[in-house]
Image 1 (cartoon, rainbow, N blue to C red):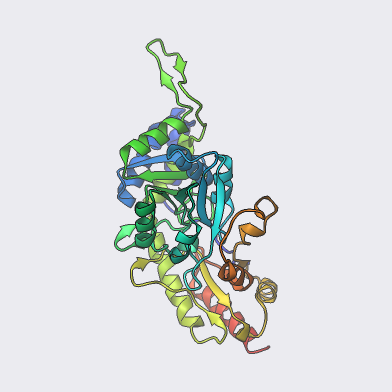
Image 2 (spheres, rainbow, N blue to C red):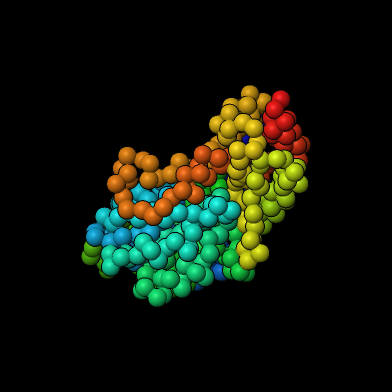
Length: 369
């Protein structure tokens, strides 16, 4: 089986994790927690970073930090993994669904303003599958309407927008280190901000708002959250971060090779990379158009028969039972992409031989064989 996306472990992971075990610093306090935050902030060029137990927690923490809550509305794409939408509900706010761009799969910035109401508090773009949203337009809209912007960069670590790292353009950015991401800690996330007050507030909230008194008693002045990352996982993350540039290089090289193999296949629309971005190509994603000859779901079945794992684009959240009644714009592009989009094997360990096999199957099926 050629898997969709599995972790690449090739560096100091064992060494750093063993250090945690040998010294007994295995829980949520330890030198690797601090080091991971510092090194990650340096990599994305943010002033501060705050580790969390997963990417969903990072998004919820960002919303709470910015005061988004009961009665507020947050504009978010429906074509996304459900985490950012659930996080909006966790804080008592209401998601408002905006359509996406057909070529990049991300939030269509030109359709945001028609959804803004007096209740709108924030915009939450999701840089899905690695391609950044149009952050200049989104930030301009946010400034004119006095809104916050929280970037869901959980799938876009390593992507760049006009020379800067995705996740650092908005007020707060969030990342995930799930096992299928560019780098992993098994489970984990990160919040970053160039506003130190936001970052400090997020850190305080994420650690149960704990204040240690002179006699070592714990005092909690307000409701907090246990969103901490164990030192063990942070150690793993530090090791992974040491190889991130190589991982990113491989991802982009493989995407280029995929493009070369699939560019001439009728009915297969390959992913774009706008001139103002650098796409990390977390997953290599294509659209199976009507001209291809068989439907997307049939292609998934046929690939599986050849030992190739693939996955459809995320099912739109507005079709999920908890969110069917939420306010939305026209979502025709979202629905179309879900019905036709497919993610192909994208692991860092993927070889050109693997890509050749995947591509040959897609070429053969497109000819009606």
